[in-house]
Every structure is written in structure tokens, then in C-alpha cells.
Image (cartoon, rainbow, N blue to C red):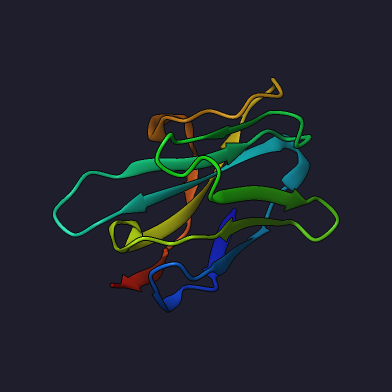
Amino acid sequence: VQLVESGGGLVQAGGSLSLSCVFSGGTFTIYAMGWFLQAPGKEREFVAAISRSGGSIAYADSVKGRFTISRDNAKNTVYLRMNSLKPEDTAVYSCAADLRTSDRAPSYPSAYNYWGQGTQVTVSS
């Protein structure tokens, strides 16, 4: 399985960005997908997750109401739409894939089997 993120960049506070993660090398529809961030010198943090069917979605409290996760199973792609960005959102954002039999959206990194390389998001004040 390979995951390739894109869409990161530099944006002013209050702006928006859309991240994409393309999945290949497996059957996308049997994987839950998640987005995580890691800021310099800090631990990896959960951002959002979506179940295999898209019927179960979870968000970190810090992004609720601002970020939206979605998936297109026909395109093997998961998206993260980020609105009202803040300087504290600055980090490397990575997508991850979790092979599981249930239709859940886990929020802990250890649940995920595969990780992308990440894309940098920088929000200026």
C-alpha cells in the first residue's frame, strides 16, 4: 500500500487549504483512513478519520467545525478540507490507512497500518 499526499502550502490565517491523499496497492474500500499532524518537536496528533464506508467520522476537538474529511472510493482518495486556518495548525499533515473489518474511524495512530510521507501546511499570522 502506498499513500501520497498533496495540497499543502503556505496560507494566511483565516484562509483555506484542501489536502488530498491518493491510495494505491490495495483495496481502498476495506481501509479506514485518517489524517494526523505533527508539529516540530511535538508528538503526532489526531486530526480526523473516516470509516471504510464514510458512515462514521471523527474529528479532534481542535478542528471541529473548521475541517472536513471525506473520501471518494471510486478515486481511491481521501480529502481534508481545512477552513479558518490558524497559525497553530502549522504542521506536517499525513494520511494513514487502517485495515479493519468494522466500519469505524479510529483516532489513535497505533491503529493505522500504512502512512504517507506527509505534506507541509504553514499558516502565517
